[in-house]
Each structure stands twice: as structure tokens, then as C-alpha cells.
Length: 449
Image (cartoon, rainbow, N blue to C red; front, side, top):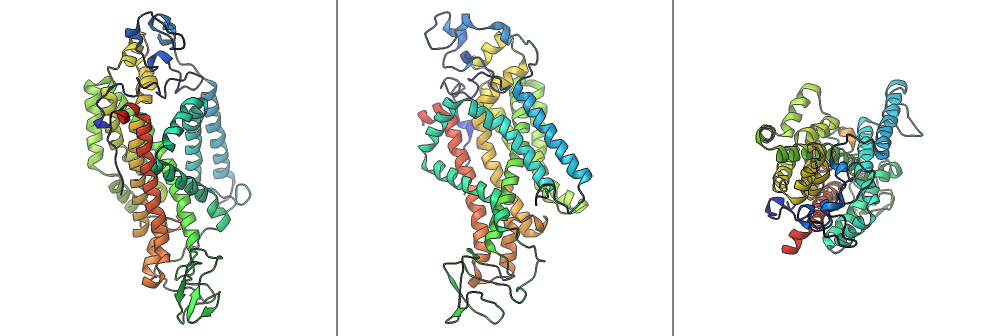
């Protein structure tokens, strides 16, 4: 179902740097983007000499060496705003936790859960370290967007994910959250529209079902009140789809915010330092791969009970090993690239070389690994929900499929097909978009192929 672009096939150590579209080329207050243009602007300052061309950027003799001499940590307005946002979010969380009684709402009708708070934290991180840097580089962002639009699969995936995001954010609030019923119920109580087909279809009547639209020739026709129909226990299928989209969206952002920093730091540090540091970090990665995250979750579940929060956190903390190994392999090939050697010769600190030069140039590898890992986590969450080893009240697509299958038959296919289809399309769209983003961020490799 999914494709897995392997950056290990890229044999050009400077494919991103020499293409002139490195994410680290834009200077500014963003701590992740303050990079000398000469490092990635298409010419190596170590070889250009003193010949400068108008508009081509600074050459070796024009570099401000004091900027690279390790002048210390500079606190930017972006960093201050990020810390301030975290403090404000923490203050609201503590108020809700300490002073708002369980069951009461915090604002309006909103009663946030732990998953909601983790999602808000993840959104803050994504805003400051993904959305804001892209907004500060309009020319680079427009180039990425133009490249993406050339790929029909990426455009369709992006359109679907936009609908998926809106459905996850607004759907449960507009359509309501499905009522969770004990597993094993086969029929709804009297008066509920059980096994109602989608609005364009009709299903056979039986003596146990109430048909709000009225039976015609022994058939119960669907209605726009329940566009995707209802389950045999009277639950709205569209409400299940919206609730599952909300949970899948939260799983995606939380997992991404946990996976990416850990995998990127481990991979780039191992590649840059090499030697014993590389050996120790990669041996730990091997050890972590020997104990999969789902095994860790099963042990935690038997000790403390099922919890979707524990599932998300454990997969984020113990399932980044494959991404880290791929990042390490990609960064190792860039260790002796011209822009890295130039920064080292200028006296840049090792942490600055990693942060300003290695990390931006392995972004394609990170995205490729992330968009393979996130669908896997979504499928694992749905699988655990299907098996009943995660809370049933979180509205997972896996729970919807389980309820639909155990209380349905071939004539009520809509009860489980639509949640399963939503899961499949979401996983496929994330993976396909990731493949396209990797190609966009690796221009030289794409041209060679």
C-alpha cells in the first residue's frame, strides 16, 4: 500500500546544497535558519576564491568570520515567543488540572483531555519550527509549492489531507461524538434508526428495525440526516468517521513532534561525531529495534490498563529508530561536504554546524521516514482499538470497524466499510505526500533519475 523512498540510494553528497534550494539559506531571526548564504548558495567559499559576481552572494573573502567564531548563544524574538507560548499553555493546563473540577468545561463547551493538551503543545511546536520558517521564506515556499503541483498524486493527497484536517477539527463539534456502547450489542433500543443505509441506498427491512423514512416495498431508504447510514446499534457512521479523523489527526501531530527531534538529533550527532559516539548511539538503536514499541505498550497495558495516551507516547518515544538510522546514513555522506568544511574552517561550533548545515540538508530524509512511520502508528492504533486494548471512548476508526463487524452482516456493509476506507485513504495520502516532498527536497537526485 505504501512506498518507502530510501535516501540511501542518493550517492551525491551535495545534492541539496549545490541545488541552491537548501532550507538553511535564508537568514533571519529564526534560530533554525540563520545560515550564511555562501554555505548553500551553489558555490563553495573554500574554492571560489575572491572573485565575486554581482547577486551571487558573498565569497570566501567576504565572509563575516566573527559570525562563525562561536560568539555564544543568541536569544531571538522567535525563541522568546516560543517559550512564552509554552508558558502560557502550561499555565492554562495547570489551571484546568488544579481548579476545574472533573466533568466541568474549561471554556464554553470544551472539556479538554490529555490528548487535547498534547495536541495543542504539538501545534505550538509545529507553528514555530515548521509554519513560521516557511512563511519567512516565501520564495523557497513558492518553489516547493510549484514543484508539488506538478505531481498529481501529491496534489490529490494534499487535498484529501486538507479535508481530513477540517473533518478532524470541526466534524466532532458540528456532528457530535458517537455514543460508545458496550461491545457485543447486536441491535439498537426501540425507536433508534438501526442499520439505516446511506442516503443513496436502500436496505431490506426486518422486524427489529425502526425505519424513520418509512419502508417502501419492504426496503428502508437512507436519509441525509444520517448520510453514511447507521450501525445495527443505532450509531451514526459519519459521527464515527469524524471522531476517528479527530483522533488520527491528534496521533499524527503528537507522534511527529516526538519522533522528529529525537531521530534527527541521534542521527546527525552519530554521523557528525563518528567514532565511539556513533557506535554507542547505533548500538542503542539496534537494542530499541529488538524491542518494538507495541511490545512495550502491551507490557504497560497489563500493568496500568489500556490507554491511548500511553500508546501515542510510547510509539513516539520508542519507534524512531528507523528514521534515526536513515538520517545517520544521509548525514554521514554530507559530513565532508563543502559547506560543512567551510563552517568548520570559520570556527563554527559543532552544535552550530549540525543545526545550521547538517539538519536542513537531511530534511528530505526526515520527511520520508516520518511519512512512512506515521501511517504505521495510525494502523497500529486502529488495530489495538479493534482488538479492544485501547480505550473505546476515544472514537477510533478501529473501534468503529470492530463494532460494525461484530453486529453487522453482508447487508449492512456501510457500518464498517467507511471507517476502514477513511483509515486506508489517510495512511495512503500521508505516505504519498511524503514521497513527493522527499523528491522536492532532493532536486539533484530527481534530475538524475
